[in-house]
Image (cartoon, rainbow, N blue to C red; front, side):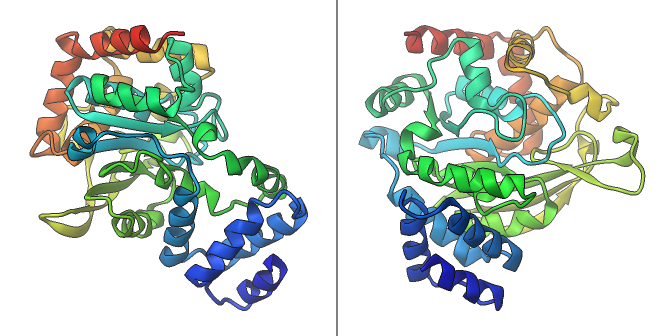
Length: 357
């Protein structure tokens, strides 16, 4: 079946929903060869994934995930995820993970979906573990944490067991220098089914299609961003780099939708915020221990430099997407207040205390 679909994709023909269902069934079949799976994923990427194909893969894989038993009260609230796809390879610290804790301290229910590092030195799972949180909560434990503490981490391998049969093919594609559809899918597969999402992507042209996918999956409030890093901030000429975050180093491309406002695309300048001059090096991260220290310093209010600006800008967007504030400017101000009042630091300590083994 996969070999037949490779031929179809080679001729530029998109997959139907039924074909995606069949393809996923074979991708997670341990009897299928790694080479055949990798050839299929490569052919799909070479053709270029359509919005419909990405949505169909996301629906199929979400349906195969382990579902946490969220109670009706949690479901009735706006549940937010803040996540980047990764892949920008710019070496920044864990901005979205820091933002998640700040937003939770505002009373927003945050279902953080993530994994260990794939394209960076420290993924969200790595840094949260280094901070002292238990990352591999059982589904009922995660549901309770989400209900009682407004935060839970959903460790991707625990909720997507079938992925272990896809991982070798992804690794083979990476060795061949080929990306796959799974570079896009991570933030779309949160088993908690968040109603609001802020997603960062590493290429500006991905903002609108990924936002359209989110909308088709039933997300009520969504924003997909890709932040430009200006040449002056990278010391690189004749090229443009993009963060999978809102950028304090250049303009940010945005695609967003809300139930009461429809769908829109825009370009946002950071000039409207009190951002300090900075370069990409000012946002650099490192290994899990270093990144955990960076997160603590930010949440404690000790670091008031460019890293704080990056966190506040992304927290502003997250608070807005969650419906907590009416504008990004108000979100920036609330984020700063949550740090300076000690609420963000207190939320981290609370989460460590309730999830410790």
